[in-house]
Image (cartoon, rainbow, N blue to C red; front, side, top):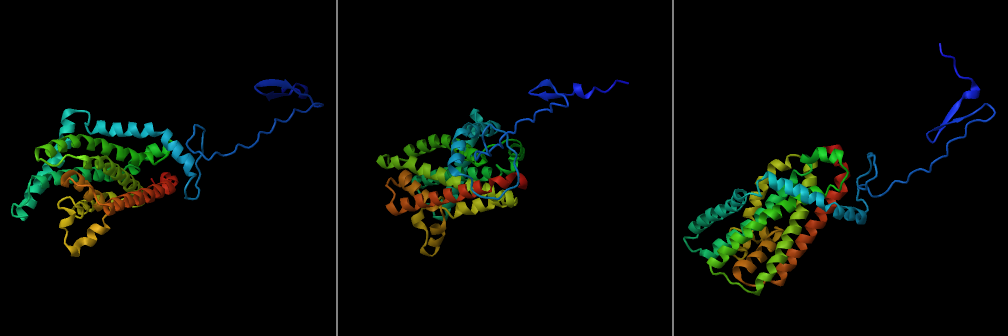
Length: 318
């Protein structure tokens, strides 16, 4: 049996090297390190241990700064989704355009029959413009509703601002919308609709639609974490929302007794102004523009803040 070393040969490991110690000279105590102060930035490169804590808003300035720094993540996730949908192929972009185009043709025939053939080619352009815009919002909300629940492994294994998930859905819907602009431009010219300075309002209204879609997508994505059945009912809600929006008709054609429907519809002023600019050839009224801006801002603030305030609990709920 190996003899135990004497006390005179006791050693202490200090900084990776053995240091001899004797009974008369006790080993020096290791220097105490100051406790590490927890940083407010949960998405830095440091190692973090997540513990249950109270739900609430984080410091917004560091959050949005980190969100902007990780924007490439949203672009790559959106590019992956588009590649899965064959967006980078000719046939993929063809089917992307032909679906709402055929839908506009079907609705035009049905509405024209109901109106006894009184609708002209300008109304078909109105249908196309409205359906293309509404389809963008619909795709953003529908895909964004599952962005958190379907990204469970990503959320559990990676530290990043969760807001990037619904943002990637909005970006995907926006990129899918861009090819439809070319198709509408051809119809706009063929039908002889006016081309003038009022078209300069179109990019501004499109930006309002993107802002609105961002807020609505964030709100629905966070709500789906708590109520999973939302994704099942969402297609029916979006179909009713389409019928309640000035897409299949002009907003001025709504009877007075049904005005409350368009007044409570947050998309109605945006789509109404969209139709004014593209198919009517007029500048939207100040009241309609004000309502469009107000609805977009309210939906964005409510949706984004609700999502951010709840995202710390997503890992527990998934």
